[in-house]
Image (tube, rainbow, N blue to C red; front, side, top):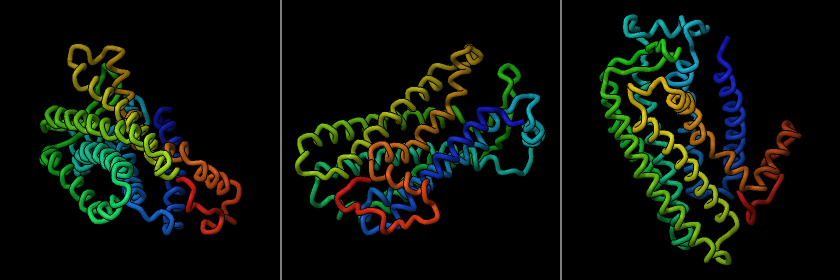
Length: 308
């Protein structure tokens, strides 16, 4: 039988991506109302988050929720250091670190987009429409550059008897890669803090000049930053507070177990934040749930002056 935490992750992850997919469908079906860089980034981020979530099952969730007597033990045992296979685990392991760079970079991009929406009201969309694709490509290349060395080394599952679970291990310099990632996260979090706090502060000086839609998207960006801040605190504790002397302590075990859920707050947070700050979106989701087969996405609402 699969571990309850793994089943729980499948449950809330499945619901979230169902909602996430419906939101993407709503945006695309009514693109003439949503034709802005923010929603283009939102759609791209959907695919990044989906990839991150699915990849985490291979590198984090399944091994960390597999004990010595669990059903998946035999499967993981086929990919250990002494029983190395052709399964390209090193690709998924590298992707794990690469997508962390992508996630934090995307939050920074959203924050900067909202920052320009309140400080450059008239011409910011013209500039964003020309550079957003190149920024996405730059993020992907940057992430690959910082993590590609991990592709050179063997990656396998190891069983930790003291903690009674499996872990994904690499023969490369994982500690060095992880430390660079943490420093990157801290720097990006500091920059997003400045951008979001400045945006929210300036927002209240522009209440009569900025639309309700823009206001709510700025709040979505701000709370994404709060989630990001929470995540970097947990990751920093793991990076700088854990060592071989305390890795079996209760707080260390708790930190290891909570890391996938911390990642989920970043991966799965966007659609829920949009729902929280968008009455229109909540109404549409409710209508879809009540009448899935009869719903017409092009005629149920007028959003030109509303929020999403």
